[in-house]
Image 1 (tube, rainbow, N blue to C red):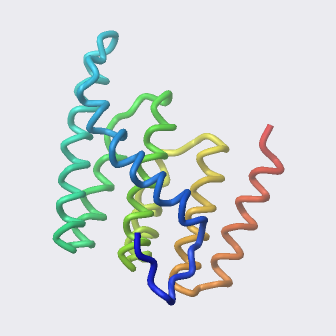
Image 2 (cartoon, rainbow, N blue to C red):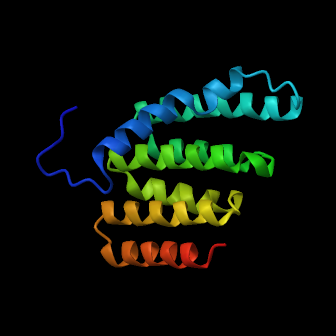
Length: 160
């Protein structure tokens, strides 16, 4: 992997790279291949989400970032059971990381804003606030980044 001279990672490069590879390989496409034997409705949602994931990836490849963000938001609008929130969070963080690496942090922020209602657990909210901080840092809005990290800290301290 070649890192540009002026690149300043928001998070450790190794973590971001491994996370991106892991999530792209394991997120929704593999879920769609699982039988979902106990819940046919969940299996259908996962299959739809896997197709939607691929649509987003193609739009990212085509550099159609606004459409990619809008299409990604559709995944989080699906009627997911509450126990699937963790995998949804991984998907959200994967997409926002893609936007950040393609210098489209504002699209990542837009995706977070449009998808935030899908997340309820304190752990998810902490992760989302931190991700917003990384994205704001990526567009050099340091005051907003600080606010996001402070909110993440506040939520972590108050979480059970």
